[in-house]
Image 1 (cartoon, rainbow, N blue to C red):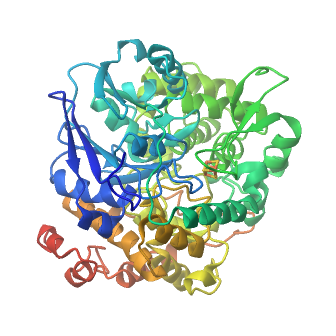
Image 2 (cartoon, rainbow, N blue to C red):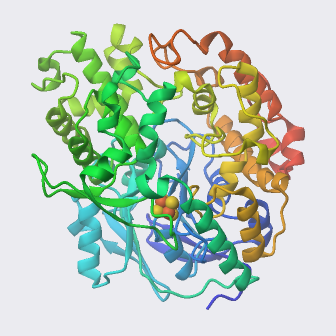
Length: 616
Ligand code: SF4
């Protein structure tokens, strides 16, 4: 049993893959108060233990898996974990989340976090239960996809309820945008975290289900808060349709990406939205830990060429990535490609932007089928997309070029092809939106310290809960101010070990935190925990050579929409002003975005002041 009652185990598991050493460490209380858990603890250990000059594939790089104080409690969505590492896409930090059950099971096993270091001499997987932690030979898992490894580990261990997260062929073959996937369809996806795991020859981490209570300060209140959070989350249309419900509203707002940003017209959006899929396919709910808001569903294809395939209801980003952005209006094909992307262990954002760039180049005559191993890559050619994904995940033929992501591939090809690629100069692609119609997310994507969206407020229904008026999304000033003011909230959620979709009411979240830990935080104090984490990551990125000149959109990413609701509107004339204002409002140098000493000191990070590289 745990010897604390504040929702913490207070223990870290450290695994050195080079030596095979496994040890248990104490997580100091001061750190838990400063960072809570999840992304915060990950950022702290990343900055502390990964020195400048250590590259993503260096054995000295760390992968930190962390739950948080909510992990394994009755709070809905408290199976989420955060993964932090130095990633292979952007040459800097990532904190990325996956929902499911794994985070809860980690806590039942007696740990808040795992720190992975070193590189195994041969492929292994880590098996954890509350009585024993061991490295297991992974020969039987090599070459298997992310669903297959779950099945094999279940068969080999005889544990039907074991939770497994691992890498597919893409991670084994060091595809730069490989993910870590598990719990049948959940993914930690950003900045090549699966590629880092592949470099360490760690195929998977499996955690037994050893159910025990996580002792909390006020268990009755935790139950009441959990019920209230579930009731609140169930009001969202996501419960019925998943994030797929966003397709049509996003299209109408001009933020559904269509054919690599060549147009914003896609009248077939109603053939790929959540309503269409729920009405035309067999689905059943597949909620995560303690969640009664089952936005995740299993979907079965019952007719057509993919009949019999059962996968996860595609999230919005798969629908945009494998639908409108590649000129495909066949929902069955999207389900097939979405399932394949997860199985191979590829990030759906980077994979679909890479493929849509290939298709755009093919349609413009820049690529011919000869350049593409004989594949005709016309818009909507889903079977050839399928073939290309296999090539990418195995780095075969043209797949080797594309396995490094769209920026690096476009730079290799050069000329007009480079101008057609959608990416941030730092090295990664945006989420599955057309951010030219949503400037807050374009700015956020370029300057984020987490390698994914960290501040833009689209998930929040009421900005007034944060003291913010509604934002005019075409006002450079309002967008930059809103992003700076929201910085901290989402990353605070990522420190708790909870799903962002169930934690959408700030008052309930803070009430739940008090019930679990006894910490009675104001909104500002909570957001300061998120800001502290962001500042640590920003310091880490500057120490590791972040070039602020690369925190800008590529030519196509920053281009002006030719039609649709955002027609003729361009962020580019305002972008540098917005970036500087955002930096300044965060207490960072307005040119470089480097945290200023007084900002670090005010967040209790004075010890990082000496880590800051000189401005020259
Ligand atoms: S809202 Fe969705 S992702 Fe979040 S915990 Fe519930 S089912 Fe899982």
